[in-house]
Length: 307
Picture 1 (cartoon, helix red, strand yellow):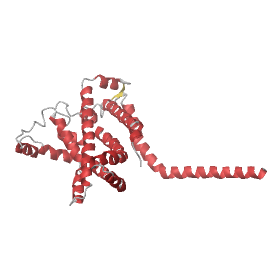
Picture 2 (tube, helix red, strand yellow; picture 1 turned 90 degrees about the vertical axis):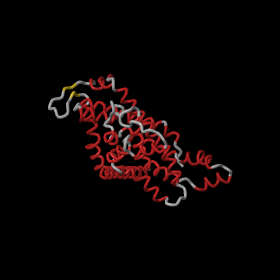
Picture 3 (tube, one colour; picture 1 turned 180 degrees about the vertical axis):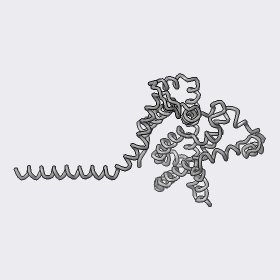
């Protein structure tokens, strides 16, 4: 009996040493990344929270504490409702449009077509381009007098809208360009998901007499839910933080019709110089992103089917 107790004590000590060694190895391997996250992510985040409680103009040596004054000002500002509405419309249009069109493009590129490899490369190419460069390019294409879009509409007898000045066309223009730039990325991710669907399941459905549409609805789409969930999270976060195309094409105008939350942070900070107020808006946007991600992880992921 005494020997068993000694052996158990010895095994316990060995297990404790092994656990300590594993913890040390984990800290050694993950330590550099943790330090980088603390310095370049969490420290600026906490500093932004602190700045949001100050009335501080960019470059000024003096900052006055105002508590929640910046938040109260933002929630009561007459432009806040318009900015939030624009952000929601832009996000829903770009995310929903990219998901639907990207899936359709992926289904097309998954077929055995001649030149399929070249078509995949061409479809993905806009995603790697600079957003600012894409905005400048499309700015000329949307010119209502000399642009390519005006020429194409003229062929079918339709006059070109005033894309730059007449609502809601500036926001429509931004959505179209954003979709064009990101469509290839969504299609590529969906294409990878389509190629992972077991062929024997589709063959069995065909033998049972299921049509292509029924196979897509009952087999392919359920097996694509992990891919859809991933794209929904990443595209939603990217859309809420979009800035470069708006800056290049409309600069938030006309009359704030394309000003999103992200662009208003830039405008308040670097145009109006109100760094404290801009930090409060950035905090609101961060909390919105956090809430959206939490909802997606809590409820949307329940409907994800992992094979």
